[in-house]
Amino acid sequence: MAISLTESLQIGVNDILMRKVRSLITIFGIVLGVMCIMVVLAIIAGMNKSTMAWMQERGGTNKVEIERNWDYDFRGGGYASLTLAELNQVRGQIPEALAVGPVINSWGASLQYKGFSYSGQVLGVLPGHQRMESWYPGKGRFFSDIEVRENSNVIVLGATVAKELFKTEDPLGQSVMLSDQMLTVIGIMQEKIWESPGGGSFGGNALEYMNRQSFVPISTMMNKIEASSLIQSVQILAKSPEDALMLQEKLKLILLHIKKGKAVFRVSSAQETIQQMQQNSKIFSMIFIMIGMISLLVGGIVIMNIMLASIKERTREIGVRLAIGARRTDIFVQFMVQTVLITGLGGVFGIILGYLILDLVSGYLGMPMLAGPQMILVSLLVSVGVGLIFGIAPAVKASNLDPVMALRDE
Amino acid sequence: MEIIKTQSLIKDYLLGKVKVRALAGIELSIINGEFVAIMGPSGSGKSTLMHIIGCLDSPSAGEYYLDGDLVSKLPKSALAGIRNRKIGFVFQSFNLLPHLNVLKNVELPLMYSGLSARKRGEKASQILDSVGLSDRLKHKPNELSGGQRQRVAIARAIVNDPSILLADEPTGNLDSGAGGDILEIFNKLHKAGNTVIMVTHDRAVAERADRIIEIRDGMIHNGDLAN
Ligand SMILES: Nc1ncnc2c1ncn2[C@@H]1O[C@H](COP(=O)(O)OP(=O)(O)OP(=O)(O)O)[C@@H](O)[C@H]1O
Ligand SMILES: [Mg+2]
Image (cartoon, rainbow over the protein chains, first blue to last red):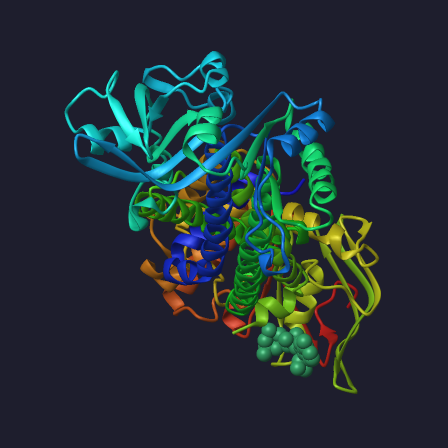
């Protein structure tokens, strides 16, 4: 019948209180290691969460996009655009897509109203564009399929466009000039706001470019405004994230075929971006968890050495305990418990410090960081584990002392 | 009845390659309730013998019976329990744990024998009362005089009701007054039926015992019951 754990704990706490300064120095490595691991895990959890939120804000995870491949060397010929016929050819080969949304982009078109002008992107799209981006008018309405069929002269403005062009006036029902066309304002899109991670220092709304866009029916764009009727980008909605990935691969082949082997388009999917982000954060977290592990290892070795050294000056105490009836297991448990207590304490300090740092960093970056209870549990288990591993050698050494020699020790 | 019996007890130490014979065939028997003093020149093997009797060490050869049990053949792991239940040790240099107060020091053997914290406190303060230290329970050892410290050590040695009280030069660090108090306690314990074995260099101290055993060069010179 060895002494109980409570007894060992009591002895351990007393020993630690007796050697406050040394115990504090001893746990430094553990504090650092635990803090490191906890902060990294929390940052990653926070980043993953904001990535998902960003994807949701940009129309969800079922989206596939075809756009110009900026890496392609166009001096070798080829155009990063599709004709209506080519678009229909694509559409015909992907019946599994929920919706296909071609976009004609008129860069730097100038909108005019009462002598004021506003330069921004005007996009020719179908009504399905709203669903594609999960983005709808905040005021008025979007144009309808009928208006597309009839090449109607209507326009839906982005929030910033409306503000800058009309100031305090109500834009709805007013007419703006684009090229030589008078277009009636029928709606104003909801304002898109995204405080990006790091927005505090980089200033602002990562989705502001969307507030600077305006929309006209794609037919109006083709037939009345743009001289060319070429489609520069297409958005496709799949049934599920998995479908989106398959659709992405399929579209790459279809487009290569249509463009005779020239990779003028880039096909991307939200799902792929997420996977890349997760891959990146995996590497990032691996690095920092390695750093944490190394501090824990170093901290563990430091603790082991200090415990081993402390046995030297406690030899007589061990001898006395053995003389009055302590078993070797009692001595073993006593030293084991003490090491684990020290590392556990280090873990607790590490968690507290980690919280303080997370608070500071997330306040500074304006980024949510998640330190859940399971992370605290992991940190605690890790620090206790370090104590269990590095406590063995000192505990074995202490419990193997010869009682007579130990009592003889001066 | 013999509480201690040894036959041809030998203890060798290896100093490098040289064998040092600390005990060279000890034949000893001590009867239950005896008060025995062991004397002998320095280096004659008195402490070595006490360590073996107290189950802190095992002989290199020979037999040792404690309470009729052959303990010289027991594994070291079994000796701890015997030390705890049957042996009380008092050292020349007190050997109290400096960071524990008087009461806690005396409670230690009870802790290792698994007594509950409440019973420990009761028993320890009762024993401390019997050695005249009931007003020093919360003192640290370094706040006590040498004589008081040795009384704490005796309290710790007897708190578990051991069969034998072993004292290795218990008065060696004390003046004659404090030493006299210690001997008085031993006497009382002896009168109460305890077996007491005490090593001393002081003939006058040894005279207080029932019997004096003299050791020279690891052998009993005279004083064994057989002589
Ligand atoms: N661990 C050891 N290693 C080697 N030799 C030892 C060891 N312990 C004791 N001895 C030797 O054994 C002999 C007996 O020592 P012991 O301590 O028993 O003597 P003692 O009679 O108690 O002496 P003193 O009166 O000085 O305390 C001595 O010669 C000593 O040098
Ligand atoms: Mg001695």
